[in-house]
Length: 279
Image 1 (spheres, helix red, strand yellow):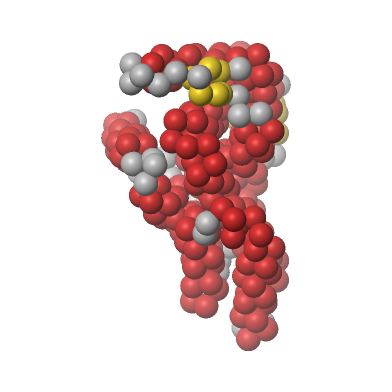
Image 2 (spheres, rainbow, N blue to C red):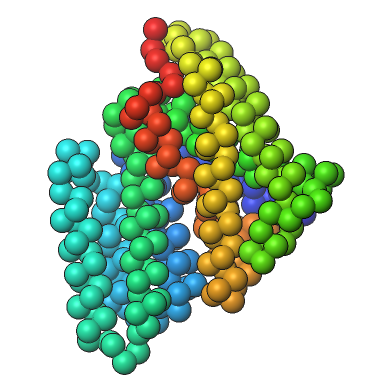
């Protein structure tokens, strides 16, 4: 428990530094680092870390995306993804006796998913500016982490019916329902606090609480899907944790599995209705 708490405090300190430099290129670097670590853990799960060409191509793909300008991202992303897949296929042809197409395909799919997810965080800042972009981060982290926290405690005290016994035996239907409720309440509460804090800095914002309350269950359910998906990968890969970078918590993917699934959903929501506006 002590190790988990220390790791959590260090993680929060790093998050604070990122937030304080949110409107600078520091965010791009931070997102790129997280993507590279996540890809490294993914390569470990797929048993491909021994193939240096695949490692280099996947690292470069993940590290490059957060630095592409939004206009280039929107116009050229299909070509960039095709180039990435084409290079991996060339590597597959050269090392076909050593590599499994299943593992390679798995790595391609999740490298793209992880890289695009992290990049969406950068582009929300670029599209909406620091204050609204930071609010998107609040919605993302609250939705993912408070859903997980709410599900855990609700499941401990009220859980009776298994949600996915063969994937994650400890998760329950009651826990999932509790996670959704806690997510909705937390999203509204943290949004209120965010607006209140920014008012102290002479920044006036207005949150559409009705839309937030309606969309929070969707965010919570997506978070659960992300968590269960990571559990499937670990079970089928025969590993307990993706990594050891966060003692007591595992790897980046262990801590951010649901977050990475939620980011694109919040990006889509904000592109349709930002949930918050400047007054």
